[in-house]
Length: 183
Image (cartoon, rainbow, N blue to C red; front, side, top):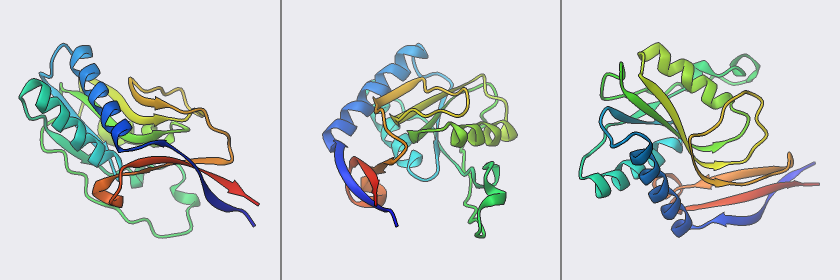
């Protein structure tokens, strides 16, 4: 029987803050300001990350960006293989995304399947001008042709490892750790 054990801390609260500050600057630079930009966090940990990015951008630009919450539960491609009744949460995007520059925000980019589901969910809501992706950690192992536009940290991992993002708003601590399955 395998158990999951903590292997190493790869980002502490200061490293997370620095990464989000850098990503905020990159978003502003790539979009030549923040006109028509909307941040949309993928539930669960993408939401507090999107909120933190909005606060960082507000510090820099002095403008509050709209932040949406996207639930992708019913868009998952593994929904039929899950043995439980999925809990669907509300999607709440406070502005019309048609013609907007949407920045999808998530904690970890792995196979790309979560992002694919998020793209499907967004397109069902409206037709953004562009969709960009911001992630705190890119761990590789892509199964779909998806890449992030903004990455806090690239972390090469093995298949036996799991990247766990813990955020103050949910977990009462800010850190990113690698866990590993041990026999």
